[in-house]
Length: 189
Image (cartoon, rainbow, N blue to C red; front, side):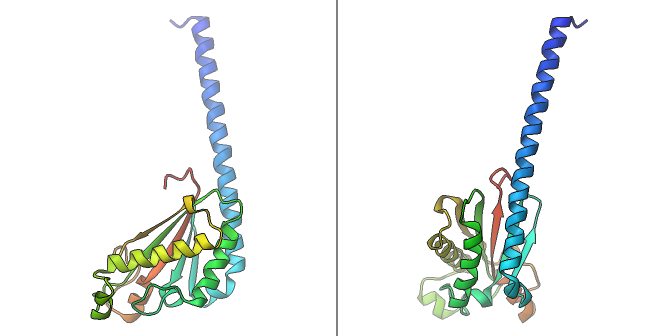
């Protein structure tokens, strides 16, 4: 049998747990609202790139994903960012950098085409290395545009995680991409 003092302690503990849950809920709602505002700003700012299919912007539960077409970003087989891509990435950075609280993960991907002799001469011996160089260049450019270096990371995935078949030129083009995932710091990234 539970006595009254123990019941009071149990009740206070349950109330305290409820307050923490409400606080976490409120923080989650705030982060969600911030991500939603950034998502809306990105869509408004990048309308022409989205319409031309050079950029795709997706809203996920605790993140925003900006997928940049490789034809916009890099010359074929290269990793140096094109001037057109710099303009687009600068738009993204301009929205994300001020008051940045969210992490940005830059992910590079390639198609399944083996590395050719020209890239081999430059020390690029695999699609994984090529995708890493591409992701790092986008990361460094974003930092040069004001993104907080401690809140941005880069990782190459090579030909992993294709979004289309590598059996057609169109599919290969879709798989050659860089994705920027903007995730709230509490999203378990």
